[in-house]
Amino acid sequence: MGLFIVQAALGLTLEQRLGMLRTLRVLGVSGRNLVLALSLELLLLGLVGALAGITSGVWLARLLLPDVAATLGSLYGAGVGQELNLPWHYWVGGLGLALEGCCWRAAACYGARPA
Image 1 (tube, rainbow, N blue to C red):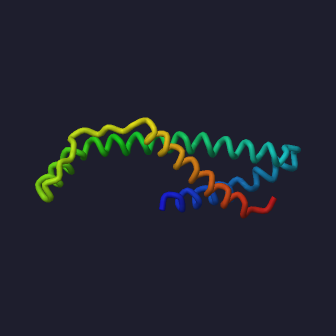
Image 2: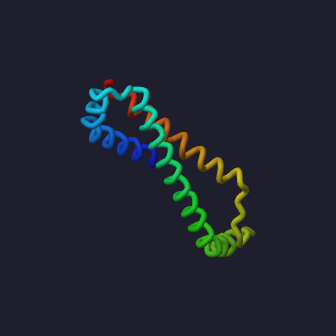
Image 3: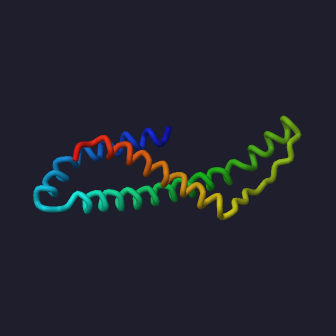
């Protein structure tokens, strides 16, 4: 669901910037440089957003884990730990997945526009 929101936001952003992009092309900026600048901006914003999302998700999970563990223990007798331990590759995987999804949505969105 989040990727569809990203695609809609990218499409709106590109539509709003279309006049500026055309002006830059007329002024002599190459299409390659424009695509490079848009891609760099997308990766930077995607990185900031992914890090904020992962950090807030881990914070929320740590906050709610004791109550969830108590509920699962009382309902099902399940022994769930009271502490959240995430290995480093979970963080990297989440970051990679967010950036990959952002890039795929951008490719679908930018590819649909005329040059």
